[in-house]
Image 1 (tube, rainbow, N blue to C red):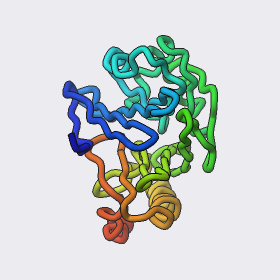
Image 2 (image 1 turned 120 degrees about the horizontal axis):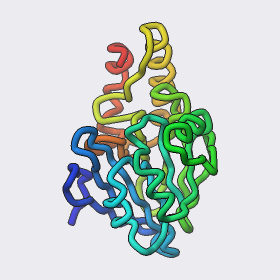
Image 3 (image 1 turned 180 degrees about the vertical axis):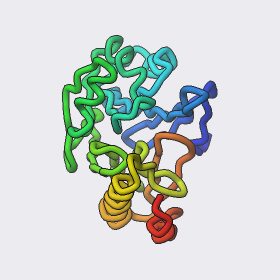
Image 4 (image 1 turned 90 degrees about the horizontal axis):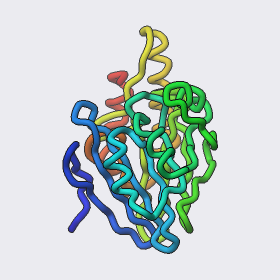
Length: 227
């Protein structure tokens, strides 16, 4: 079946078969409809999850008996790590997050972050690697994860920093919110759109996927509207 990335809470996951990795996407929690992603190395069987957001029983069933090397939490917001404690307790997986958000994630979940990462760091998925791209603004430590497929186009997991139709939300009083938005749109433009080709497929923390090419022309509109 052709991968579309269109999933809904309570529904089946969608799977994508790449040369070296498989990508499984599932939506959890009918209210928040968070996306969780499971990446599996086809050569070693190693698995990494991006955002253990909710419904640990569903996530653990998807992980299966192969084990889990790491859970990467894209940012500190509560809806992206409600299943973290249960998944880590069941699998012993390493926990990974952007350094500026690590303490907040631990405070909210009770789970220590065993590896705090910064822009340019790498996360292994067996014989493949994900590159950490720090994208500040939605939260101070938000990260995206880039898989530069040697046999195809790049794949980018964006958390809540980039969606079809715009960047993620920013918060606080008007001045702080405007400052955070400026940081976010700058990082998205400079670290993602200026670097990655149009065929890059991206996978957000909620909703459907898109490509960099489909969104590129809208960047000036996003900047002008301020959200």
